[in-house]
Image 1: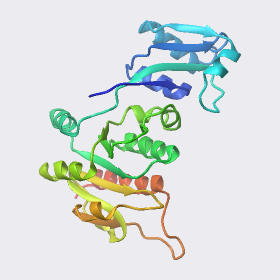
Image 2: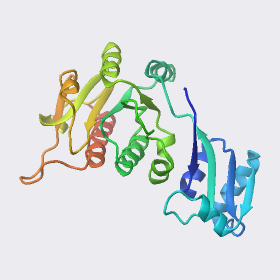
Image 3: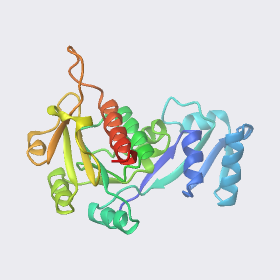
Length: 249
C-alpha cells in the first residue's frame, strides 16, 4: 500500500464496521449524550479496547465538524491508506490463494455511483477497483459515508488504464467491457479470473479501452431505454459472476 489520506467517517454504521475490522482511528468525536443506543455503545466499547481517544463535545461543535448533511452525533477521524500498486495487489491476492476479480472504472466520477459500486463490489468479493489517476481522490468522506465504509475496504488502484489492462493480460485475467453490442452477459462464461470495465453513462468507455479488452458484454433492455445507471450495471454483472461461480457446472 502507498500514500495515506486524512478522512472523516460521518456514518455510525460505517464507523462501527471499520472498528470491527480492526481499523485504527486517530480520534472519535461525540456529543456527550451520544452513547445510548446499542450501536453507539458498541462503538464506545471497541474504541476503548483499542485505546482510541473519545472526545466529548457539544452538538454545535459536532455540527461545525460535519462536512455533509448528516446529523450524526459521532464522528471518527482516520487516515485512509487505500491506495495500491496493481502488481503488489496481485501478489497479495495470489498469496491469499484468492481468484483475481476486478472492476475497472473509466471516467466514473459521481460520488453516489462510485459509493454504490464499491458497496456492491465489497459484498460479492471483488478484490480490486482500478481507476485512472484522479485529480480528486475517489476515497472521500462522502463515498465512505454513502458506501457504509466499503470505499475503505475494497482495494483501490490508481494507474493508467492501458497499463492496467496490459498487466491483467500478462496475468491471464480476462477483461470484458460493457457495451450495447456485446454478447448477452448471462450467456458468457464468467468463471475464473476476470475484470469488468464500466464507463460513465454520459461518455461510455473510451475507444482505446474497447480496443484492448478481450470482449464485450451487454445487458438486454426494452426499447426506449438507452442504458442503465452504472451502479445498477455493476450490480447485475457482479452478481451474475457470483451466481456462475457458485452454480455447479
